[in-house]
Length: 494
Figure 1 (cartoon, rainbow, N blue to C red):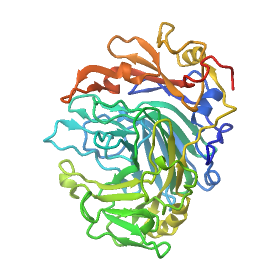
Figure 2: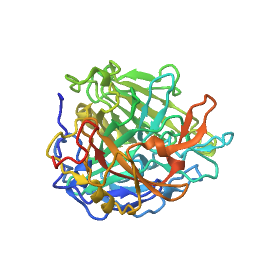
Figure 3: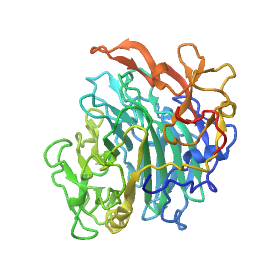
Figure 4: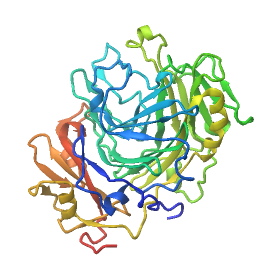
């Protein structure tokens, strides 16, 4: 392979790893090993560590956020971890990460910035912290255009929320970095497609008021995902009602989109190279120190030489933006108090391959933010995901089962053996090996065939089989990656 090798740059600093033990809750693993640390050490290195002039605190203990939220869904069901730090001016700001690795709450100096999770009373569906959040989304090709959310599923009124399972996580206080791995989900509860997308997420507090987000998307299935939203996100119009697009000709300058177009209508798209590489949502006050959120996407000047053309399905990074509903707080529960921002990088994903994409979110006074964003826009980048090909720790499946507290009577698929050695990351032709607890009888199975056990035994109107991760499994754990059939399953440590 040609390109940047994804080396294990964080091995010395990673804190203990955790494994998901259900779709809805996360429990600690029995200790941390080199194998588990390597599972998350997949991203290219960054420029320096977190800044020294600010602190970041974190907790996995849930307390309700201030909101307010327009959904009856329980916030505790989505919560994974909270981080508290400061913005550009040193004012407190809190970020909350959901189980799928998505950013579902940003409590700033002017209140909550993430939209209130609108629902239309005419529809018998809820989307609590599933759609109006900051996340990645992978989309298959036409005509069967299916989305895979990093966050989770839409559910019917009265049903329990379903979020994408967290498979591993790690916090490094030295690097001010949180890294995690999750399994993306089709947002419809049942679908003719089972998601076969793994999301690697890394949040690094790169500087005061600057959050670096690196997402890795790996396709372990048979479908291509040429459209990637990285990110799909947005803000409350009542908090940040203005949208500014960076000027391509003057560093630190931007023009306001006034009126702000409706999302999906004329004037709501642009190509990254025709901009200054960033956009910003700001308060409607006119003051230079009004609060703002900057989002970088670069100008497509990241290196693409040597990348498989199939992973570059478009010539330019596409931007989509606009308002999705009304502004009035009085009608916030009936309209979408939401301005959308979507970045669709040049990159796409094909079976057995992966990509990574890095962008920055900047928080603070608008005048200061405009000076900072050009620098971070230049660091925005992406490329093909190359996992290390040698010198990785391997672990026998038997040891993986014991470390994850899988019952001894768990059923192994015929192509697996307890002596088989698993890798912490996918090598050529490798498949993830999952342990599932089935909802139907509480039994455990260990398999690399996710469709077999996610099948509902039902068909849609077109006669296609229907599958559901959320309805089929009560607990999900990723044990490692099995070599492809061409490799020796019980091979020696490499």
